[in-house]
Length: 184
Image (cartoon, rainbow, N blue to C red; front, side, top):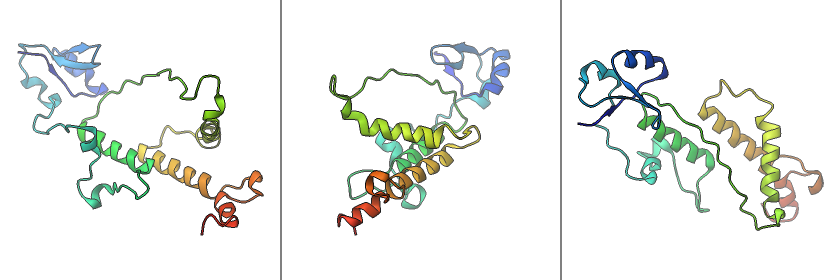
């Protein structure tokens, strides 16, 4: 026999501990040691009838056009908001009872060439502006993932289409492109 891992919330930790469950610090999850009776833990046992998706592509595959609306666009790609909605739906489906998530901070090196910081200047400038204009001024504690995705998508659309730039002659990017005859 093997240990049986439980799907329990933080609020249930004292209950499962009192019944004899043990904490696995590596997996950060409660489990019932091999040989223990599982009946008292019935409400926290993982669902075994749900097949696990085989690949990450399966997680994002639309069940129906109406349910997920994940459509690949003609320009080779998927809007970030639709991708994040698909990820959110897949996580919600896979972990219906909720799950503790460990956040890892990773030191990622720059993708620019050595001693050539202009490679990332446009991205660094955009993300700096995004944080200063959108992220820092707000309290995000009561915002759901779906609401955050919508706000982020609205900001990116505003940034790309409507914001006024002095360097473009006080025009928005769309107005500037139209003035050059690059957009209709």
